[in-house]
Image 1 (cartoon, helix red, strand yellow):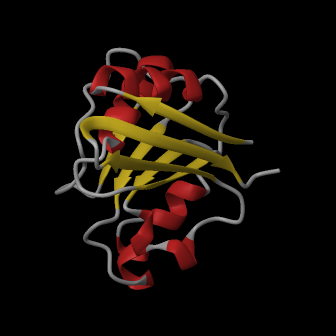
Image 2 (cartoon, one colour; image 1 turned 90 degrees about the vertical axis):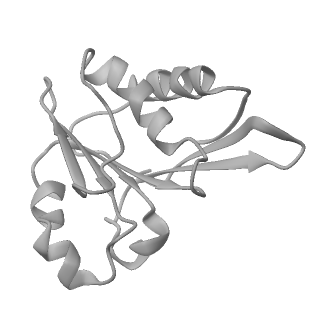
Length: 143
């Protein structure tokens, strides 16, 4: 699966996230890539409307990981401040991977060597010609 979608505002980005989340199952990992303000958290907020409706989603910038209880637990990471594998161990990253929950990780540029064997990538790019327009690319490396 390799899908490219254009959105024109945060609400459309959330809708893409909500639709994508319908395909997820326990143990899935979503590696997110994109610049600051690209819409990664908006995408996760949309996904949570499907996975754990009513969850208050905000960027885990300072907490590193937010946990959302749901039928399948969801873990939302911000890897921006992660510098090495020791940091991953200290936040329990590998334990979360083995928990059977669904993991969304922003700033995966920082941890590419430590991504699981199978995962989805979600890349969100801003468009130079329109500050609100985004190009969202979803790839499935699982199959």
